[in-house]
Length: 313
Image (cartoon, rainbow, N blue to C red; front, top):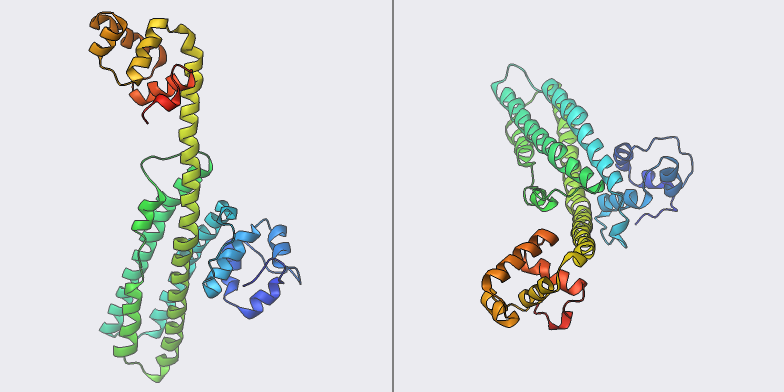
């Protein structure tokens, strides 16, 4: 496992594939003999998040000592840059090599290009969904906006493998496509790129499943808890402001309601008419803007009208 005080040049020398990750994180070359932490800090990249992704990509290491330390903006930058690289460079690059390596007059070759185009379209559709739905949702979370109609679990359930067509393409080329000596080396080289692309895509998907999605789950939990707390706090503050406006009889009605009494039972208990109880209840709702039994219970506890130990929760 690589650590923050390891030299960046040593990490790359051991695992040249990390060069791709450098670009995704926005790290530029020319860092001399600086450590990973020094390079990351100089270029404003979160060191802990960078190392988590790198160590996971290299050897599947996922025993993160503190997942709360993940920088969500750093992860978002990494994933967005990965999509841009794959859609705008990798897919067109492989297609160009594939067309060059195939005989344009061969019907099977044209079918292979068509199969590749179908695969590329599927990948683009998948990544564009994340760009349109997932990433803006996370940006909103970071700004404290909770979207009750969407969550990361919805994305997770539909985040399956999208490389089946690529596997099919490789197998067809290897098993069934004859090639002459002129095109054979080009075709083998293109296949090598396709295999590398498949491996990268798998790693990308694993980073989303095992680092990004769990990190967003924690972020959701944090902000949704805060959202509930804020609402309760506002209600409590409001009830404190309005508590003096209630009459003693209205407070008696609230206590009776919290204890689970019906309108008739309240009327008998307080020696008043049922219509009077109904009138008091309307006034309570108007003054406190609390409609539910649970809300009235919280109000009664906060304002010391009842003791929490006497309330059935």
